[in-house]
Length: 325
Image 1 (cartoon, rainbow, N blue to C red):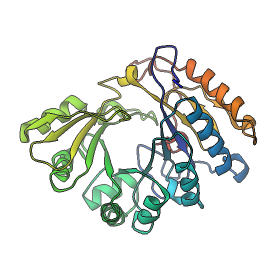
Image 2 (image 1 turned 60 degrees about the horizontal axis):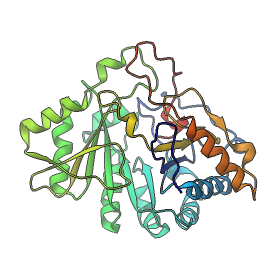
Image 3 (image 1 turned 180 degrees about the horizontal axis):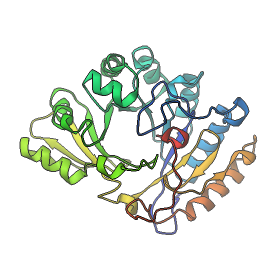
């Protein structure tokens, strides 16, 4: 069954944020002191998330990504993923993590049915990593990546490129695709926290691509049917791939295929929309048809695009951990 919005976009990708908690404090994601913790009763149970997932898949959702915060800090996550992987009709179950807990959990994630990982990593230099994440955990993340490789879970590395902070590492990250069978994705900085001088941090995807072309011979590669918004390339002879995600310069909204559910049950059909519908009152056993009907209605109202490039953009600042990174 095809799920589409009023602009003819096929919506086949659901992101479930199972927690707003995180063991890092990345400067573009949340304040140094973290975010206000929700009470236990305010966070959706795994049973409620499963109800949403089943309703969404019944509408045509083919891919589910579990996110946070950091999803691996939530107790019982492996059992939940095992149940999610068994949802009839689901084609892809993937997870986004900062990698800190992967050394201990990579094998369990694979056994649970997770098919791919996205690992957030913004610097390969310990001092810069600690500055960006406010945590001295680079060695743990690198060990986590090694663990994912060892157990055979395909992975992507997500690097948010920030001018004057880590943009001098673009070539170092690209080099990883020559040494490993992975995808490195360079993501334009997004002003979720609405810092006053956020535009000075943005390194556009065309600039990243030019820097790469100055040092490597690249060729474009086709993306999979359920791939995200990245434009993908490969260095000639490399094992892996390079992706460019351009929410500002590329304005990929015309191809947006996703909806998001926050840990408290709010539906967000656009990351930068101020409007979220509280699904929680509908999440009772046996109510899947009603949930599905509401998801269909919300998708039909999905906005055409975000307004980040407008100086009059009126979205409220938010922590990515609150919405689902």
